[in-house]
Length: 128
Image 1 (cartoon, rainbow, N blue to C red):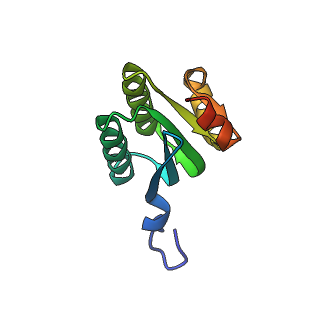
Image 2 (spheres, helix red, strand yellow):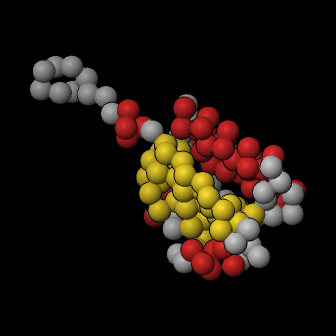
Image 3 (tube, rainbow, N blue to C red):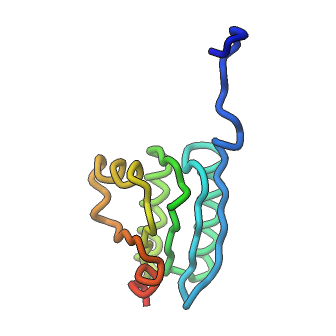
């Protein structure tokens, strides 16, 4: 509660998810900034990845360096898109996932399904 007795709400900015995409050496790079959580952020993420996969781009690196948190719906979306990428002959790599993201994926026994990298050129090379 704030000092005025009114509840404090998280700012819309903190609840947002910004997504930037580009292609490098035949690999789609998707940079996420913010929270991957239920609602508009998850809808935006799903729309972006669905569009990328529909274009036949199955080699994807998710840049998670600035993704602050992920909830269970975000994990579910990651798994759906990973499955789609693999069915297309590609994969999804995680670049610089936060400690929180790594711990969350480990907690639900899914970390082993993703290759994680701290070096972007290495993540890209792993898909070529």
